[in-house]
Amino acid sequence: MEKLKSFPAADGFYMPGEFEPHRGCIMIWPKRPGSWPFGAGMARKAFAEIAEAIADSEQVIMLAEPDVKECAREMLSDRIQVIGMESDDAWARDVGPTFVVNKERKIRGIDWQFNAWGGTFDGLYSDWQKDDLLAGRFCELFNYPVYDAKHFVLEGGSIHSDGEGTLLVTEACLLSAGRNPSLSKLQIEEQLKCYLGAAKVIWLKAGIYQDETNEHVDNVCAFVRPGEVVLAWTDDEDDPQYEMSLADLRILEQETDAAGRHFKIHKLPIPKEPVRITEEELSGLSFEPGEDEREAGERLAASYVNFYISNVGVIVPQFGDVHDSEAIRILGECFPERKIYPVFARDIIVGGGNIHCITQQIPL
Image 1 (cartoon, one colour):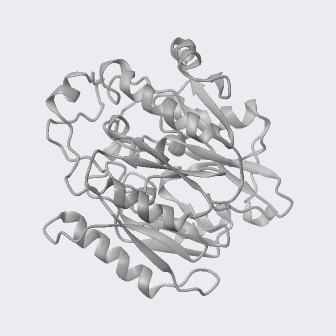
Image 2 (image 1 turned 120 degrees about the vertical axis):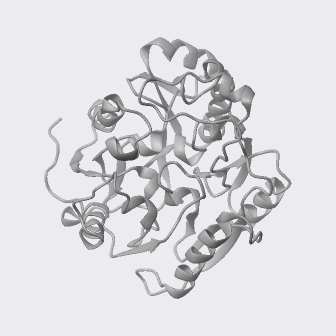
Image 3 (image 1 turned 180 degrees about the horizontal axis):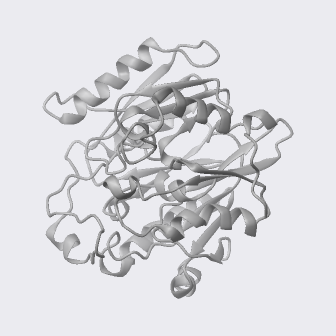
């Protein structure tokens, strides 16, 4: 399929909010030895639980490398479509296409350049070719017209849209030296507006402490609906996250969205006890040359903001922490029309991301 060379915004296309109706969801079956301990056994159980929760209300398409396709088919119900497709890891949010729609709800994809969260500067692995090809291959397989944005490095987790012209991003990520160092902040913002149909980009300062994606926005702040967000928060002033979230809070309190609305902000606590990788988990990982290696006791970027909004539900990470129930309560109040699906996500965060990171919605 020929890639479109025009800009989505000029064609009347824009990125809808995740809370809007979905046609389906893309996931990728986990396999990478440097991300998922002990043959990804526990991770696959978590992926399957998440996929089944999403499948309650929308089609789930699970992509799998040829050697693990049968494993995915055996562990998933018949509600879930399993498709063979090559990838380097399982972060569908970042390597899958970003979908845009127009007023007639026609759907097109965007194929960004993917460079493993920083390329040769600070990327997490040295060979990312299969991941970089995945978005285009998916759109070709499922007959979605696709915009060629290969000149611009971007991951799906680094953007959040309200569907009404407002985007949330973080400076820490989008201005990092491994993304688009030849472009100014203004030039990056113009690219986002041209491709995502945004009228206003709100630049938060930071994401979650120790987030190896250079602090994706989807781990720290997300739209509940237009004009309303959740923000990862801690009251512990000794936690490095405190100053990071405080800076973001001040920006949100001073800003308005594209429609001129002031934000309603819900503070969503991070786990009370930092989530750290253990010696046992580390012993189950096998790193390739050039791959970023973890260390025992390393703090992981655990956040309840990294949830996925399905057509009828919100799939929320849980960590076995005292704040798990508070996160469920707050999100239940934010989404009274949806069912809350709590999923123990320890076995996903070990890989470096969470529920939102392993999902990518296809709008309806």
